Each structure stands twice: as C-alpha cells, then as structure tokens.
Length: 430
Image 1 (cartoon, rainbow, N blue to C red):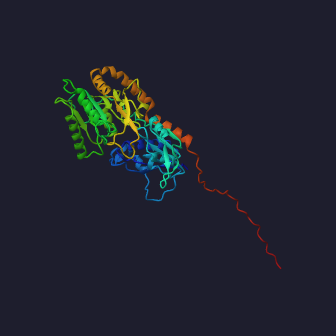
Image 2 (tube, rainbow, N blue to C red):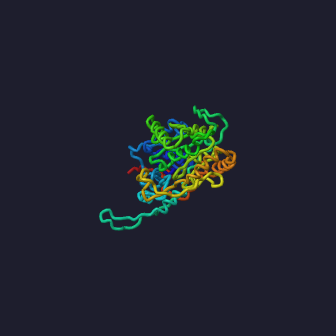
Image 3 (tube, rainbow, N blue to C red):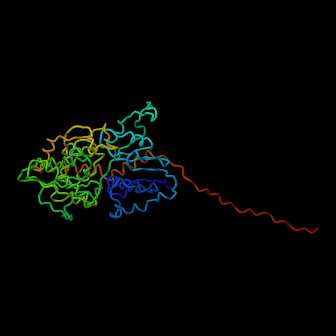
C-alpha cells in the first residue's frame, strides 16, 4: 500500500501559487510512489476554475478529497501557502512557500516553518532570509524575554521549473487579437500591486514613468505592453489601471509620449507563450523590487529574447549576469504605502538606479542585435537547468532522502491447515 500523501494547495486558481501547486502535485503523482490526494484552497481574490478552463490539468480533479468528510491521517501532509498558515496534520509534514521578496520575514513565518518537518522554498534568496531572520520571543503578559525565534527545522531550495514543452521559441504567427502599431515593443508581465509610484513591489509605476521619460519627444519610439491586473480581470480593475497610467503621464513634461498598451484578463499558458513570441515583442522588462523566484522572467527567457531586470533577489538563481541585463541599485526601506502583514517596516528591498534603467531601455532599443546572442545563451541555460523535469528530479531526490518509512497495515494470513480425521468408534455387543 502506498503512503497517503495529502496536499493542501490553491491548485485551481489563476495565481503564481496556483501554478506552483499544479507543478508540484503533478510531479509527486508521477513519482508513482504515493497515494496523492488534494485539498483545494483559494488564493486571496484570484479567479477560480483554472483546471476547468485548461483541460490538460483536469486530471487533478480526480485526486481531490472533500474536507467535510472524515479522512484518515495522512502519512505525508504538504501545505503550499505562506508559512504562517503551516499546520502539522500528518505523520510527516512539509511546508512549501515561494518565500519573501524583502530582507526580513515576519516572525510568524519562522514559527510556521518550525511547526513542519521540512520546508521547500523557491530560491536561495528566500532561504537566506529565513535563515537570517531572528526575533526576540517575549511573554505576552509580562513582556519578559523568553528566548529567540529563529529557524530550527530543515529547509530546502526547490526552484519553480518551466514547462519547456509550452514555453519556447516558435515561428508560427500569433493567433492573439493584439494590434501594436510600433515594430518594437517592451513587455512587462505581473500584478500592479499597492504602493506609490516607485514603491509597488513589481515597480510598474516606476517602469511606466521611466519609459515615458526615456522616449518622450523622440521621433522613433518603441511601445510598452503591460500584461497586468491588480486583483482580477474585472472592468473596474482595468479602468483603475488605465487611470493610473494617465496620471503618471501627466507628471511627464511632454505632449509627445510613447504608447503604453494594456493587456488585461486571463491568458492560458500557450497564449502567454504566443505573446512572448509575438513579432512586435522584442524584449521583456521588469523593475521588480523583490522576487521569491520570478516565474514569468524564467518562462520569457526560453523565447530567446533579451531581458532587462533588477539585479537582486530570487530570479538571480536562474538569470546569468553574463547573459542578462541586470540593473544595479541599492536596498531601501519598504515604503509605508506598501507595508502589510508580510512586508514589515523593518525590512528592505531593491530600488533600481534610474540612470541604468534609462540606459538599458534606450540601448536595447537602438542596438538590439548586440543583445540577441546573450539572450539565446540564457535560453539554453534556462532550458537545461531550470525545466519542470529538472525540478521533478530534485523533488523526488529530496523526498527519498527526507521522508521516513511508514509502518504499513499488513493483512493477517493464516496458513491452510489440513483437516484432521478422527478415528471412528466401533460398536460392540454387550
């Protein structure tokens, strides 16, 4: 009998954690060593029903269990979520998190990791933050110092492998109904999160501002495509983003600005790959202030096009300094407009140097051929070292090394006994 492996995760959501969940669950199922069951979880306000909309993933529904029913204790329990939600339920407990985008994680995250037997995180950056984050532990009533909150349980880096059967360079014309007037367009992919201009985590506001400033009043201008949303794909969300772009444009002293196009709504993986390969999309740009991993950046590199991004945090695990255009800068405190229960005031993240931002935007546009060979080399590295198959290999190796053997219920089998024949009694005349 295979060990029961129950995974609580948002596998059916349109989210980064949803994609991570699907990849991990599929990999564990394919090891064929476990009886895999899934507890479906939501992920914030992100849309639900990904597997229904993408039939190639519908097989995961066959593994779901009803939390309202009484289920046996799992041999192995995994939660794919933020660490403060980790709870040990099984005989062996695994947490899985993308980690943190800043320099310090909340103390509740360390406490959550310490409740598990093992934790997976997506990057060396995240692991370093977990290892180095330490806090005083005080009595809630007396405030007396009782000790220190620090990492005490094992943690392993398990990168988020890209599906190289989907994400790759293709020559077929894009079937998406997208019209871009300019022959050269930069692409950004990611959520536009809360925060003032220059302070939101993906730094979308600063990217728009820098793009306007770099190419204002130019005769020959590229375009910027934003594949973004805030919390969903609603009409209101789209209008809010368009309003933000217009407000930023008003801060630029020019009536001759380059075009910014908004792509809003849910795309399938194959549609995203078509977008990456669109003939007008020449490069990706992200001024991200911090990544636990940076999945869209990895997937885009497989299309063999140049990438401009910041030189700090999780994406440096797979991006080569030699093959990618990494912007320098410095660590700065997280702005109050962005702080929340996870991004705490004591932590810092990356602020790119504006001169380098402008240089790369201008130089990649004007001297594109100087960057294409490096992009091809990065694609080779991404495909051979950071694919889903490579992730699966590493996952299986860790599970073999870390998970103990479980006692199995054995059916008692008694030996077959021969029938004993007793001697018959003889009648006597008496």
